[in-house]
Amino acid sequence: MAKNRKLGRNSSHRRAMLRNLVTSLLAEGRIQTTHTRAKEVQRIADRMITLGKRGDLHARRQALAYIYSEDVVTKLFTEYAEKYADRNGGYTRVLKMGPRRGDGAEISIIELV
Image 1 (spheres, rainbow, N blue to C red):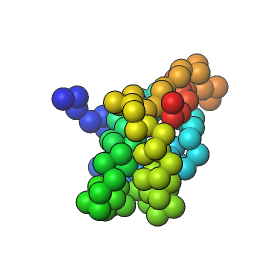
Image 2 (cartoon, one colour; image 1 turned 90 degrees about the vertical axis):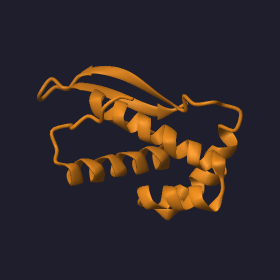
Image 3 (tube, rainbow, N blue to C red; image 1 turned 120 degrees about the vertical axis):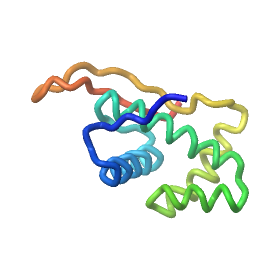
Image 4 (tube, rainbow, N blue to C red; image 1 turned 30 degrees about the horizontal axis):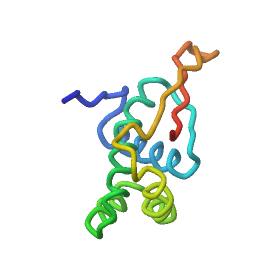
């Protein structure tokens, strides 16, 4: 299994940042961030959608423990669970956009398929 990326943050900041990014991705359907962050968010978002597809109470509580917004969890378990019922993984896609103007970091868009 791949190691977690540190992303230049301590563990609590990294966890909060990834939780925010996953919540935003599931709420909006598409976000723009750096490429390494997008690849980390992709792993977690796919796991959250898999929990939504399971649909039981334990899976809902696990998702609520990670995702900040209760509305996003409801959307995950109703809309996204239906949408991806026939799909076995690969719920997100990462598209490279090019370097950021200020510091040259590689920018990507992560979106739900």
